[in-house]
Length: 165
Length: 165
Image (tube, rainbow over all chains, first blue to last red; front, side, top):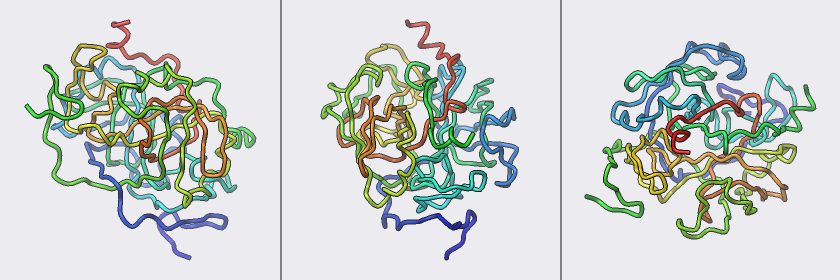
């Protein structure tokens, strides 16, 4: 059975990916964090108060106008070290099998992570934020304002996860 | 001044994009909605109770295991008709200039939209959801479970937007 950085555990299943991508993304910056190895990353972003830095490519710096008025942002970034074919996974900290789309694992067909972060300040093309758990130098894809009206759902539940608590 | 589907308004600014993409995404399905023209789409997802259908490519269907236990999901999808170089925009319904990263406009360097939806049911590789505002046949990039612990921030504010209310 093939092995990679993540490995394939018993109970996991990978599928063949399409032969060609359908569209291309630009890395528009890098995320600077204190974690250079996967084992050091927090299990999830709420576990850490570390201040991380988003370094936006200067060509896009005008796009930050008014971002400083946001208390929270949605960041999208590219988990470039994750395998993309896994559809069933057995995350080590759960030990049970779940579908990729029921997990926030970086291993997914499009390894795009989404994190809600608290914005501390904007200095030119650099943003200081709290709420990330990714590796240092992770490629940035997008920055969005977080709107309570559409993004905040206090009553949401993840049933399979709740049953494990 | 160049013109496209969206047009470039007074006060808007576009930059040159990198010559090559840095990574590729797969369209893993399509989103079926009642809206076939941009003018018919709701201004934002909270304006509509329309039931939309997410059709996942059958090759990835195993990845839906346990998704049915989630009340809400995060969907990522590709706004394939939007221009990618705009850094300053003057959205018609606001009439004032804002940076792309302070807006949820589909026009951005990586036109990846993020919507939180309510899941009604899963039938095989089809999900019925409420909370979308995109065009029919929009390419799907990802499905994630929505976790209140990391995704819900009731106190978040978008200052520039609040001042306009």
